[in-house]
Length: 134
Image 1 (tube, helix red, strand yellow):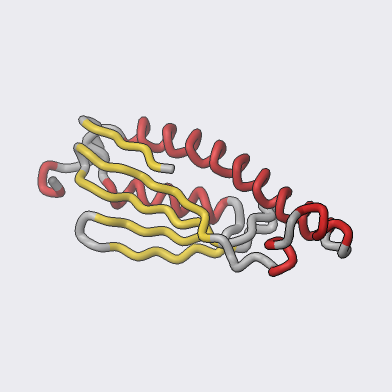
Image 2: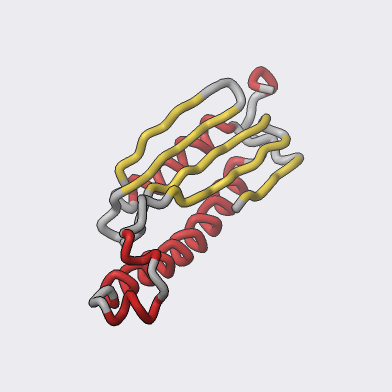
């Protein structure tokens, strides 16, 4: 999922730092990568969320016009989940189906919380970019 902002003049370095702090506050293992106009944040393994995979956030653009994209890079699913649901359940894979479903629900809940926090951060950082960073 991606959202775009324009006419905000947000310091993208500060935005990236605040998003990274958001993940660390939820005890995610976080790695970051930064180029001139792109910040990438990878987060995984939080005890607060049972999400199957790592979360990738990309902040791209310039202070006055930028986008934030969040996606779940799922780990390879167990082969048993590739069977039809009824067959999987009969073979004792019901537990795996429940775990997979729980992970999807937690991902939806996390995404909701993430976008609420990002909206707050963007509002607080509006007009934070210096003219030298544009």
